[in-house]
Length: 156
Image (cartoon, rainbow, N blue to C red; front, top):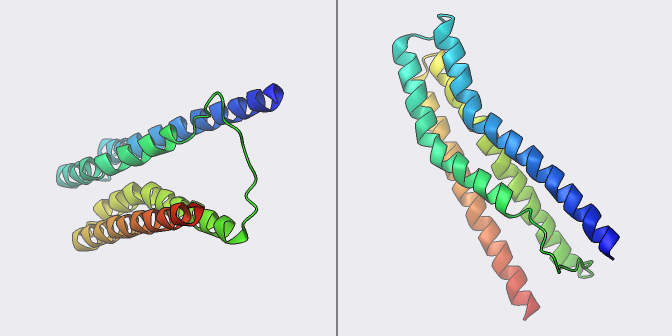
């Protein structure tokens, strides 16, 4: 059993390293794109400033998502991994996982959409798209909580 546990810790450690690298790209990628756009004359000073404000507005959301990614992938030393037999519970867990993937996709694409909107001087669609994306993230988080409560009720 210890060999399996050591292999799982290795896999989790690699996954944590990948998630941390992805987090750096998600958080600092838009700033790099804004800097490149301003440096090569693609963006004006005003566009660069609005893009920076949009990045600063999305930064707390991105930081919270990154904290969740890194915190949930630790393996406890005495943990025992079981196989779910109940099919409905497995479907609920799969739905939770897919919803988390959806939140990750929204979080990854949000800064790029903001940078694209700023580059094309589309202020209203940029703000609208940001609001819609954040609203969809909020609704997905509520859906995850609802499904997790359903699993907890079925265990009792």
